[in-house]
Length: 308
Image (cartoon, rainbow, N blue to C red; front, side, top):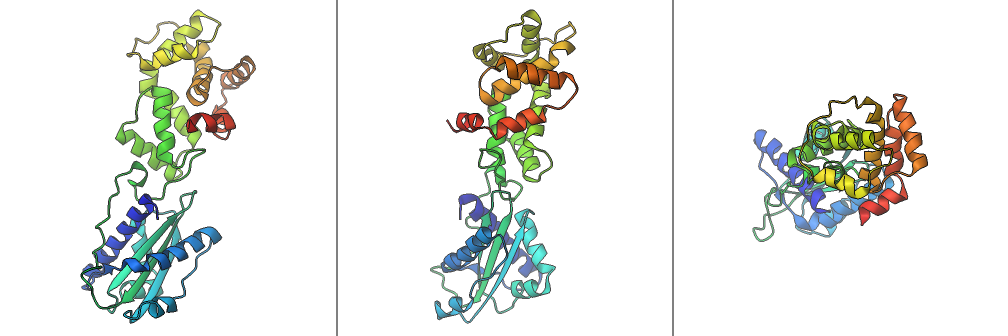
């Protein structure tokens, strides 16, 4: 398991014990030697894209001190904190989770690129061994923004997770590192599919910070000259202090500024004349620039640029 997957698995293990102690049952210790068995089932489920179970006889044959074994599996887009509740709503799974004879467990989580979480929990009955037994929660370190809502990170374009994509937009459009609150918010919105990547980019372009600090510079430049500003000039705007909004009517250059900044923000270059004219006309017609952002997201140029 990755660091993120292990943290999610630990949370689910902790939730197992919370449910058991609430029912007056003894909490379960983790039995780490089960990791390879639960992990193999998790990998098989993720690869085959279907639920499945281990050959539980191996948990008895390979560990003579194990006197009983059971397994629950699950796939969901839900946060990890929902796993135990979903199992408790299913009689066969609840029977395993609440088995009085169970003494140990191991939880395995495998995250798919689309955010799907494949979960395997194995339960066994065995004598306690203080030298290897641990209580769940010892490795519970959910500190990364993409797991703050206890979900699997969703791959976003060329980025491995939503938080990586969002962090890049802060740098590209606002010229600064992301604040933790904003990073967690937009990552959560992407992970729960409440917004698209284009929504995020266009929200940055329409944000109060961008409108107050960067857009006035761009609008003034577009009003003063028919020549597009250089990349170095745009970089200077991103590092500049806020300036007063223009008194002049800037509605005629709003579309031009949007197209310019999407090119500069995403591709780190000024637009070519043909592309600039085409997309400016699209924006001036009132149409959304979603298609421009979406096209850049899947382009080789963007993937190469953000991987450098």
